[in-house]
Length: 195
Image (cartoon, rainbow, N blue to C red; front, top):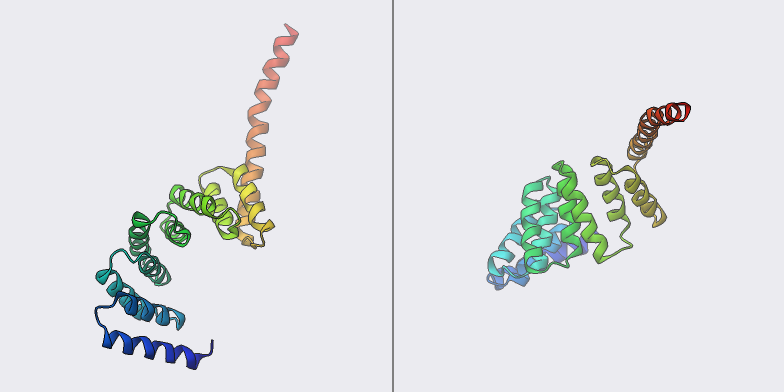
């Protein structure tokens, strides 16, 4: 879509909002037009008005959460997306948005839970496999993190190099821990055989 047609779309929905100020759908569509232009503050305002007018307009809650996420308002994003999933629990984008908010809020257990829910809804969601791996690594579930990272890559998601280095270090630490913890047992077993 050209920049001009995006401007036209904003103007058309702004006019519709002026003609029908109590139309949740008009405010929602104005929010979409602003989102498309990257105007997150205007989009947020339009989505907020849409949910004020129709609290059951779940997609407006999801998009409000997305706009807030883009503005780095992670707590606000969580709250908006929770409103959406309270009304309809199978909203993949809402669960994914919540996972992203939890990532930035440093809540790895919730990051894991949100991305597991995304994968229940769409097992081939490559980004959810990757961010599940991120959460799993942060909660010291290294082997499962590697498996999820591999699934993400197999679905075309390019893991960040920094994450892969962290995963490699965690795997090496596991091997060292296994070797260190296995050595005394082997020695004890050897002592028992000699007696």
